[in-house]
Length: 475
Image (cartoon, rainbow, N blue to C red):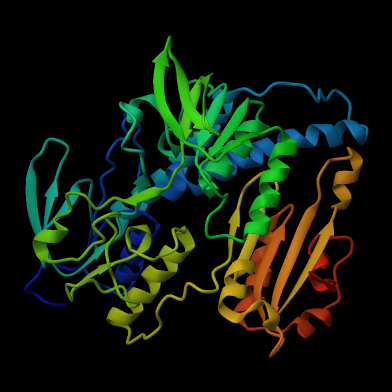
């Protein structure tokens, strides 16, 4: 321990990555400080400790997604003889919001109790700002400041939803995922603007809950993901009832008697419609404003505000590190921030040398038909290796469960294999329980398994996952 400083390590940002750094460092007996302060959304929405994931991200999103899936099962219940089930019953929004918030507050309390009771951790519910490379200013809600010092500083402030800059009062006329999961009033007829996974996930579960939902997309769906899979997601969402307006963005949004009049231009013609709610999901920006980064020499991307760090998470200031969504070029995923934080502490204090690898991270998009993937998309693989050097296997199938109520649509899977060595470099699955299926196959990709290895695996029957090990059709 360096007696020159109050803390061995100080973390700004109490999300998944920041809390992981705090936890790993305190286990090693380090003096740890944490500053975490939630700036309200434009509508005044605030939340507790834990960052985006448990409060306004992964957890409430998955709970609402699962609620929509539960609603779909009403048709199977009726078809299989369960009595007293009304397949046309309506959903109550407030009941769901209250239950989601109850679960979130349980997570917040667990975090708070841990931070207060654990030796070696000092928690500040204050806004952290860098004064120099070892000094942090801590500002409370009343604007009062105090200063602390640390040998190492880790910035893990995450990101917040972005807003367009050319629509007057857009922040008050729209909501974002920061507001949706605690919305006091049912969203009603909703326009979702954007084609990100957040946009499609929210549009999917809102449709599943019975609302009239339209998605407005400027260009492609799920930029950065496999485009064949993305288009199949869009087609399935249409079957479920979600409407799409493609090739445009809102020109204006106005308040009309508490509703939202949205205008846009499509094929040279101005069009408009009135919605109860407009949900923006056009991307996220690093929450790095007013952190004092420039003052101490931490380099950032001027457009996105994201911090520039090397593979070892070091910024342009040697003792200041940055992890998670606020860093340029990082995947905006909770598990990657957690792993990144663990490896950072091992490098700082345990002679570790592992850095975070982002090329083979498994992830899932929780759209109505879930999409799991790991490794290269088909588009990226062709660009890197050439189409002639790849074997692409596909399978289109219908889960046994769907036959009860004659559900429409099909599921789809794809493996991308290098011809040279038979190694699988891309896995894509569109179907039920995608996260559970993909997590296991993520190990397959991580270990550089070959297609022949899968061919020699006996499938579990009947299951959706067996489609992967039985795949023989070339695209």
